[in-house]
Length: 211
Image 1 (cartoon, rainbow, N blue to C red):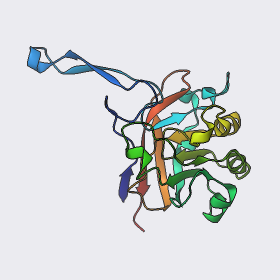
Image 2 (cartoon, helix red, strand yellow):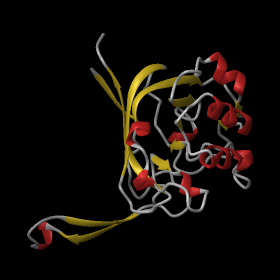
Image 3 (cartoon, helix red, strand yellow):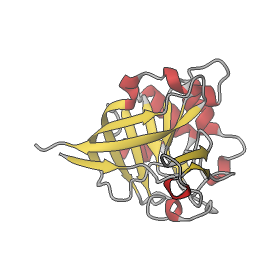
Image 4 (tube, helix red, strand yellow):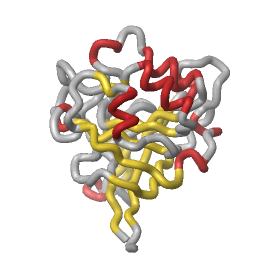
């Protein structure tokens, strides 16, 4: 089988929304301590991460209580690299999303905006009406290859987040799909079990099994 690691590396200079991670050396062999120990200061939405419904809905499911069956299982990587602006219902329908419970949107972000050290001026996101369509199709997890599933025009209203998380869908953001061919895989996306948290940094992989 082939394994694709779609997780962004976490480090102090990484692409990040707001305050970047900070690393403190607590103990080190070089200083005569018994071992190397570091302390990391980072937000729950650092790097590749999961948004739980509690991110936008008070009292909704937090990240530590998400259904693992939604986070692990067959997934479709959609080729949306030709899309500019918002991914629409027509884009999703043409890509054969219907019938899939886990969908990852590979856009021009993966080779472009996701590789920049700071937030881009524009990127590809998901249209709110497309988000509603995904709910109607029974999708349980939707992923995209940037800081947020919103387009750059909706980072004040957060329309797609309200639609998706309000319906209980899980959002996977900052998935690095640059080297992943479109197609069907097995997704394993396991957020850290942060109690009652609105989201969590996540190690995410895609598995392509031999025929």
